[in-house]
Image 1 (cartoon, rainbow, N blue to C red):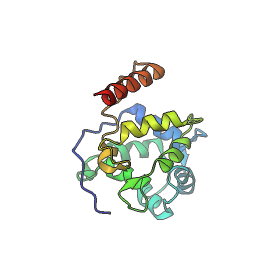
Image 2 (spheres, rainbow, N blue to C red):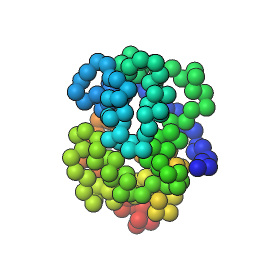
Image 3 (cartoon, one colour):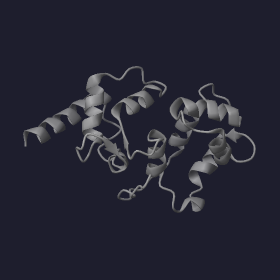
Length: 173
């Protein structure tokens, strides 16, 4: 897949992000995961991931919270690493250059705590994410996710109403 890098946006990981990632990887709450456990966990979200990719990611030994911290926070060895490109490769495993909404729905529904995504949610998500309005989610669209996020202190229902109001105003103009 020939991908042009989107406009660079700073990506900052926090300790909270680290703990969230660990909770998703290890929902049973273990302190160490074997490569086989990591593979089983990641296959839920990334069905095309291979055992070799997990071995390359984890390196020697098992995966622990501390090792995950080192992988995520040691940016010196990842000077050319673009997390948007890598994340997009996961949801576009065939390298088509875009993602269909049904694939995005399936991935979102596999996240712990996301019970059901209705059509209204998917329509709103599509409106927000399809920045260039070509009907598909491209890498460039995908890289913009987060730039429209409401502040954390806004309750989810209020944020949804704000986004819907904003979309209606855009459609009116």
